[in-house]
Image 1 (spheres, rainbow, N blue to C red):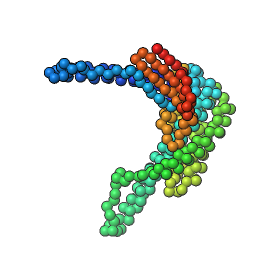
Image 2: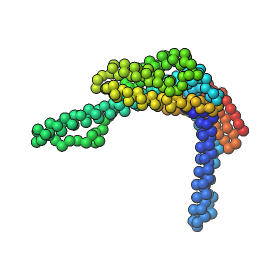
Image 3: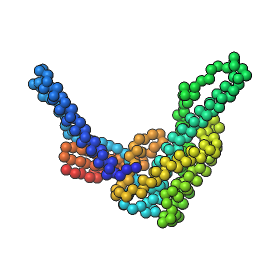
Image 4: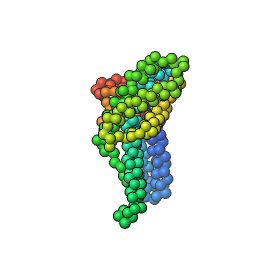
Length: 282
């Protein structure tokens, strides 16, 4: 999440910086040309940016007016759960699955070594777990992604009801995080129980607690961003990284045209068919 003004400003600044790098390279070439008797009489290459055009999709998360009301906080927390939580859950499911498989292999190796005490001649030398590569298949990732989407949906409605009835003079971000983790724990436990035993990434209550704590801390810092007192439009350019779980209709497409002395910003709808000039500076 970032302010739209900061995002566009950094893009334009990078384009300007590209011109600086080009000029610096021209200076270095000039010194080389001057020292070479054959190149000395030739013009030094010098490039200019007549026009640069950047197109990118983004999602508008809300408007920061300097003070966050209960309604704004509710909207932004729900947007964070919708946009950030599914990917975070998918990543954490993958991590837990890898650690679970490693733990099973470690226990199997310990049993193998224990039996070698009685049958040393029949037992091969133990293999290092660090040399093992644990592959998480694309099919399994898609299963985890689908489960993550269902968890996010299961949490959304009770979380919304909690926020809509909360007294924000007393309820703080830590209280929101605690409620979120209670709902998350129940939803993850229910969803994992539906998975095949060999694909279950969360196998014990202890692993479940660690899983929920990791996701909860991540989401807390997402929620905490909403206390930012800056004014502006809050956007998520990260949604431009479309994958098989993305939805292009949720995006607003922005095109920036930068010339030596001009800047045009054009905004298009989700499918990119209709557009209109949003801002023109010259």
